[in-house]
Image (cartoon, rainbow, N blue to C red; front, top):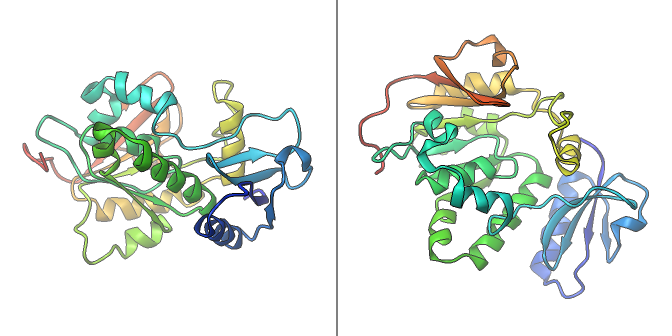
Length: 273
């Protein structure tokens, strides 16, 4: 992972916010700074900034790409909720969402929570796992702001999302005893080549650079296939080889990405309707 500094840039921030920043800094092995403009820094290359308007990942220095933050209330994510095509979306078909089938999905590589949010808009209960303290801080902040500012419809969606700070491999091998196995496990691992494409925004290229690749993706797939009740869904670049050379039961292909589906048993006609 690329070295990052943690900055608290909210003079009026409460003790809980400052404590959260301090915990994140310790988890990252990063320096904690107060009231510093990332544009005035030359090193390290990135800063995780806790400010009045939320948490964001920013490159340091001047004339750099904009910040990366999680926002479920506006922007592309909310636009997709309103106009994304509902159950006709490829991800819905891959997971198996139907009128009376709403699988409980374990999103083992939550990232910025975009696919998890889409699945929640379709009626699925989604448990999101994120092992990077930096990414967890971004996603947790986005969920907190969404809870605070959502209308009734959006609140219902956000309430279907839960987030855990845990390594997915540990969770998949020893899931909590109180929870039943997930109906579907969803994987969208990051790879070294990801983020270099011209169609990826500079902000997201920076995000991929900081987080790094999921080098244990093959092991994640094996663990997921052993735990999921009905299927495992893996999101891949359209032309990428099969993950771990494991041929899926079938695929759904789009213009730039595809979903590889590994089935364990057929989904029932009614599931968590």
